[in-house]
Image 1 (cartoon, rainbow, N blue to C red):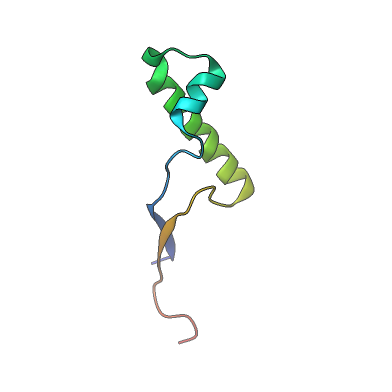
Image 2 (image 1 turned 90 degrees about the horizontal axis):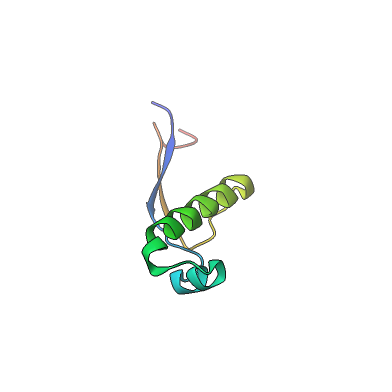
Length: 68
């Protein structure tokens, strides 16, 4: 078994939805689309930087304890 890291919590939005809607001049009916865009952009930035933008909890699973 290989080691793996799993995101347990986090993944919210780094900007308030109201601010994103106002900035994009989007209608309230477009809220779902704006949420998807912000989450996709957040994921892209986190992948590129190799860092989480928000406080996040990860679990790491190892096949055995290191150094044993």
